Amino acid sequence: MNDINILQLLSDASQRGASDLHFTVGQPPACRVEGVLQSLPYPPMTSQLCRELTFSVLTETQRAKLESELDLDFSMDVTGIGRLRGNAHYARGTVEAAFRFINRSNPSLEQLGLPPVVKKLCSTEEGLILITGATGSGKSTTMAAMIEEISRTRSGVIVVLEDPIEYVFPPALSLIKQREIGRDTQSFPAGLRHALRQDPDVIAVTELRDQESVQVALQAAETGHLVLATFHASDPVKALDRILEMFGSEMLPQIRAQLGNGLKAVISQRLLPKADGQGRVLATEILTASPAVSACLRTGRMEQIVGIMEIGGRDGMRTIDSSLDALVEAGLITSEEAVQNARDPTRVALAKTKKKGLFG
Image 1: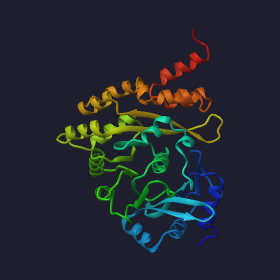
Image 2: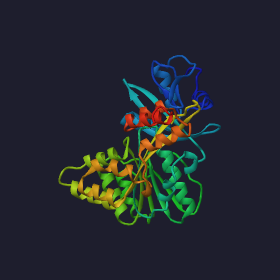
Image 3: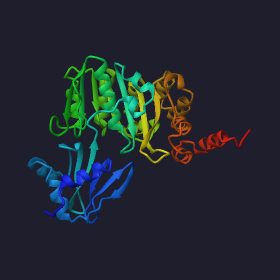
Image 4: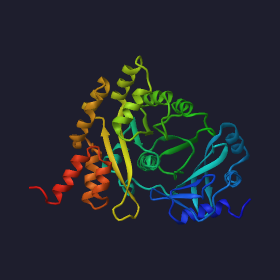
């Protein structure tokens, strides 16, 4: 093996405050700091070095699984660095890898900058709460903070299905059963089905990936359980549209009815660079299941949901544009960043111009 070792690279990335570390053949090791990818001061990696460094942190079983399935999700603890989530995979016939650094101490809802309604949602006893956003938007961190808030404030059984396990939860009022896909249960659908027989009060799923998982999650939400789940979508309406698109026309009435009855909220989030360049800040969009929202879900009038969010402040709702307005007002992001991320850039730009006193 070359002089470079995995601990050296992880340490270098960690000292830079990186969120991720990447091994790519033909490129130097790279890390992502505050959302920006930067190369580490090493030569380009050979295919042999990528393979050796990646295999150095895998068990024999994990190596065999990677070679047979060509992709592998895993997690690990590294002394002096902390906990990491990893993904090893093949690209152009060679092994490459990506690592995500995970905080050892789970941040609170307040530390994450989530609005008070999210804490209120943690006291919900049944129904489905979706946490949506792009890759790297902090969905898993928000879910971990919600699980810890629930565990800290009430007694119950929480079953968490993860691929792989990221955050390790400290003992509190609730019993938390953390089950890793591929190690403790075969798949998300299987884990969800079996979770219903484990006397759960809360079921948390780190990702709803397929039709069967969605169906079992909706069933659980309708039968007296609180279900938390992350989902890849940029906003609440797109998340709900994507769920509906998973099902054929013959099943749509049933799924719409289940969403109308069982959905409690959709929390959509983005991490944006701060105005001072020092880190990132959370922007959120919140949809709660008011009677009007539930009626739209049951009847398929999805185009009306954004309008309901705009006037739904009393129900804890907020649009991404109102969240961006508040972040600009607090000096946390620039007006340009707000306009770039707004649903209605024209309205946001006009609001900023008015605040500068150029109108009226």
